Length: 314
Image (cartoon, rainbow, N blue to C red):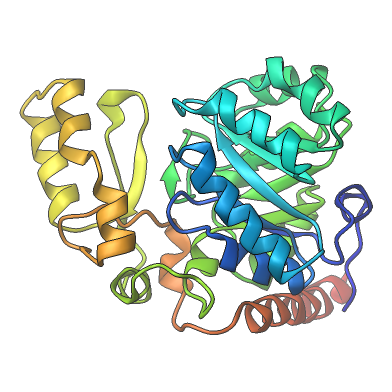
């Protein structure tokens, strides 16, 4: 089944599916593989300096000439250097998170980049649309990593109703059924993170992938609400420690210190007990590790099956 939406034309991609720009996880290898398969692969810059991100960009450009993106965390201490790098490297798509990209939008667009912020609320979506961004990634609280409060199901249609640019659904989408639901809500595409972790091209530690595969429906829990930057992770020793600290009245600084470096340890060292295994609520749907192209093909086949099964009844 060929699903083409206006988003495909804007991003010059074959299939309206984006891979989340996950810090430490979304390397050049993964991003290139998603782009080669017809979607939009996205490098996760996290808090990495520009020279590290430049190496990941080089990997993608070696592997494919198809469009790709880089996610820039606006709280990064290197954000200005990263924006300069995006312009210098003529990165086709720049997604942003953890802040307002307003002061960078014009520069990036003049350099040829499409700018797509991640938004967790209707108010922020309105503000970003007024700034002239090219599309929005509306992310529900079901997502892995840093999250907002609103769930995907009510968030997407409310944002679609108030902006006139493409909306991409993220959070809680892990297969073709979720994709079909997002289309029905008015989204023009989807962004998946957790499902793409469990692919052969993802360089995350095997233990990280297995932690997701072994997760059940209630194992993706939220920690760090007191810090103002809540995070969804797979339940483990670290999440229990952080929960205990919060219940005992630990300060924001103490909790941030306890969680510091946890994602790196889990992704690169395979420490899935003492590290932070960031993953979404769809973890319970993920049962295997397979190539990116197979994942994408299966998703689109399931979209067709879902729409044929239910929509033709009406």
